Image (cartoon, rainbow, N blue to C red; front, side):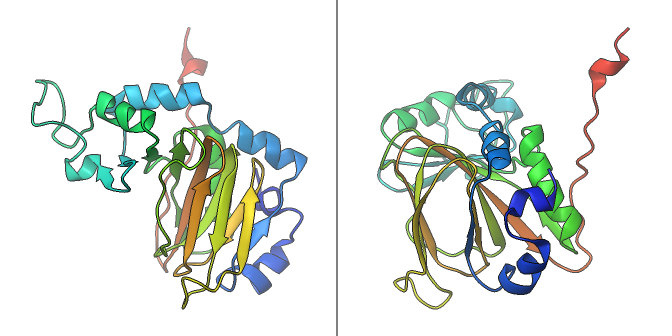
Length: 235
C-alpha cells in the first residue's frame, strides 16, 4: 500500500495543496482499496482478539445507553480480580453483553493489529513529514448501534471503511450544525477529517470502520512497522 493507492483517484499534489489540513474529503473506493480494506480484519479475528483479553492493548465500550467504558479506567470489569489478571483489564463477558444489547466496541492502539492496517498507517507516516499514526477499530453489531454523538478530535483523522456501511455527517470547525458532508460510506471508501472538525458516525449495518489519527508534530517518532516473520527461521 502506497499513499497513491490510498488516496486514488486523488493525486498527492491535490492532497497536500487542497485537502490536508484544509477541508474534510471523501476519497472514493477503487477496486484495489475495496479488496485491501475488506481484508483488514474479519469478525473471527475481532472475536479472537477480544477473547484474548490479557494481550489487548486497549479496548473501550459504548453502552446502549451511550456511556463510554474503558479498560484503562478500570470500569470494564467487576471488583473480582483473577490471580493472573492485570489491574487495567476488561471482562470479556461484560463486553459481550453490551455487544448483544446493541452497544459498540472500540479496539484502541491497534495500528499493528493486522498487516493491512499497519500498511495504511505506515504509508501516511512515510509520506507526511513529522507524523505518527495509530488506529482505533470502531465495531458495531447492527444498524443504529450506539455510537458517539457529534464531537471533534485533536488530530487529523483518516477513516477507513472495512466492513459494512456507515452514515457520516461532517460539519465545520465552528459549528455542530453546518453540515458539509452527509453520506453513507462502504468498504473501500476513505474519509479525511481535519483536526478540530465536528463529525458524527452512525452504523447503517454491522460495521468495522477504522479511525487512523495522524499526529503531526515536529520531531515526533512513529512506531516501528517492520514485520518480523519468525516462521522463516524454523528448521
